[in-house]
Length: 269
Image (cartoon, rainbow, N blue to C red):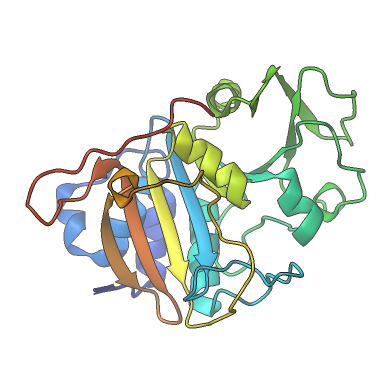
């Protein structure tokens, strides 16, 4: 297990690296650079999904209380990821339940553009992200949703039987120059991007907390056999208060037999 020991110098280097493709192979020797440089230096489209959960895989209580699941170091890690990307995506359910700011507060750095997938234009305009004077907000709505902007930029995406196509969302953001993306929640939003094979890295931060019941962080469809499970290559880091699994969803792990596992990804979003 590798330890993340962030310094001001390393963090300044990562911020300067944003979108510059200045990552070098020598950086792999430093855990900080190995974890964060692929995010910061990505020039092409790069999608990171992040989940903070308890030891038993919960992200909230049954009543929806999700505060303080991640420890202070887990929160700092999430805010570093926000600072290194250009936009952070959440679903409308996350905004309704948590009323998040989606800003960088625990670290120094730029706030990402905030993107809310609000397929049916359900938000009222009273949510905090519309009123806090923070980073710009983009609403992603279905083509047939009521016209409601709440003062934000609106992207209209064709809505099919399964909802909005995650690839259409990424394409629309890329047209606005937003290519380094953090998909932060909720569980179904993250799952849809994984199902569409659009997530490059998945970060799962685990805090030493047992909740006992409540929702999970990734709502993928059920499978019958473990042979159908995603088995990504993963590196494990200690953040301090939390343990982080950095999963490479574009590369499968090595099976017990030594052969490469083949990850089956659903062909629908």
